[in-house]
Amino acid sequence: MPDSLPVHINRQELHGLEVPDTFETSDSFDVRLVNHGESTHVHLHLDDSLSKLAALEATNYHVDRDSERRVRVTLDGDGETRGNLKVVTAYGSTTRYVDVRITEPEPDDEPVQVDEDLAKPQPKTRSNSEFALADVSDYQVLAAGGVVLFFAVLAAFLSQNLLVVFLALLVAVGTLVAVYAAASR
Image 1 (cartoon, rainbow, N blue to C red):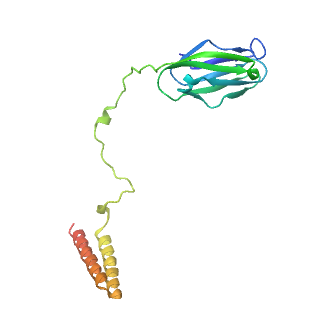
Image 2: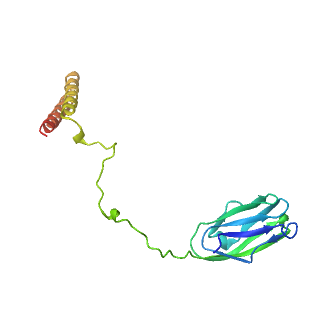
Image 3: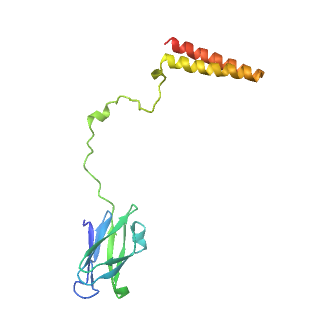
């Protein structure tokens, strides 16, 4: 199937349009606006049935003198349909229709090659941002525990509140357990 639909403008006469009668595709395609003469504006319109599966970025396009411009028709749906692409120039005085048929894409029969290495489990690596307790030295744990214990005891004495004293003792016991666990590794 062709990947572009040719539209010839001004080839035989001023504001003349030459388009194929039919166009069939299973994928997005380009409308090739080929201008053989004076600069002109071209209007493109997808009818309702085509608009369900396809879309244009805009509807009006300026095509410079003796140049070519490609306009993308993007398929954004699945299924099959048939409809008309309307091509207009000279402010509506010249109009042509292309019968566009959108089909389902053909299935890809080529098998997918899978590298055998993908079947083997890969070793798990830690990223730099992951924190592991095994990376912390015993001295760092002892120092952190000592600092926490110091502030807990200080808070208990300064507040003279029974609840705060209890929480400070709880922190102190937790710290001693952590210090013991770190020292026994």
